[in-house]
Amino acid sequence: MNAPFDATHALHLACSTLEIEAAAVQALKSRLGAEFVRAVQLVLAAGGHVAVMGMGKSGHVGRKLAATLASTGTPAIFVHPAEASHGDLGMIRPQDVVLAISNSGESEEITRLLPLIKRLGAPLIAMTGRADSTLGRCADVLLDSSVEREACPLNLAPTASTTAQMALGDALAVALLDARGFKAEDFARSHPGGALGRRLLMRVQELMRSGEAVPRVAPEATLSELMREMTSKGLGASAIADAGGRVLGIFTDGDLRRLVETGRDLRPLTASAVMHPKPHCIAQDALAAEAAALMEQRRVTVLLAVDAAGRLVGALNSNDLMRAKVI
Image 1 (cartoon, rainbow, N blue to C red):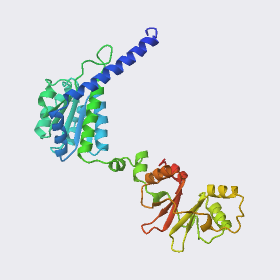
Image 2 (cartoon, rainbow, N blue to C red; image 1 turned 30 degrees about the horizontal axis):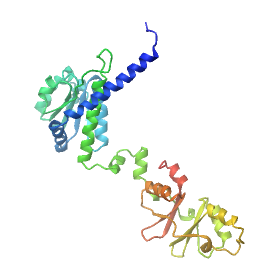
Image 3 (cartoon, rainbow, N blue to C red; image 1 turned 135 degrees about the vertical axis):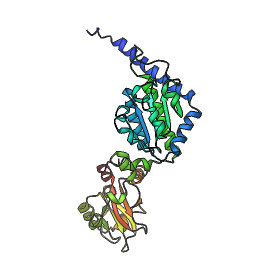
């Protein structure tokens, strides 16, 4: 039977949980040292994967850590200890490094594998809360993830201990990422379907309007011809380029409104007379994210794309970047 709900007590427990788990993570800092460095060096020297193991809640942490390692430049797999005893141990090779996670260090499914891992010759990194445990004694490198107590009021449910494991695993992944010289572009290549992948991999030439879709007129074109070109291409602007394709200027919808407001006779005006000379251009092979940054910096909504020789080859606006989810 459920006890009557006490909102004040619930909030107190929530705050206490956060305090206990924050303290558990903070305490890890004082225990980082030579063993952590050895773990990083061991993984860097390995010619294979990091085979992460863990049972129960530690297994969930292990799956996340394997995924984090793999996406940050360190090949990694998760091997379920129980399944390893029934054939999956074949996933581990001598050139791999085994990272076994167990708060108690006595998980039967893991301890029964330790002699086999030793016989295989794969180095063993243990992440455990008990250095004197079976796992801790068998490890080549020991990462101490011990916590003073769990956040669970009964001090039973894995809470602070799994938080500490998660944080220590992230620390290992980040240290490896940096040691490998892993860049944002590398991260994007392993996340091609995500927003970061689009931002870091997509090029201007993949998004820009090209060929006949690019609004452009000669410098001697009349204002009427310039307006018709802008209307037909629907970009909200038009490039003014010479016969060789060199960009001379740009004219936008905003320029037209401001010109009309002057009350001048517009009929004799030519494109060269009303254009903005030396407009903001971007290389067609530049990243789309660079185009977005340039638009924001210059407070413009249209950019002209040019080739290596500076010739007009395309155009794009902020809507093109939004449709591609670059911004």
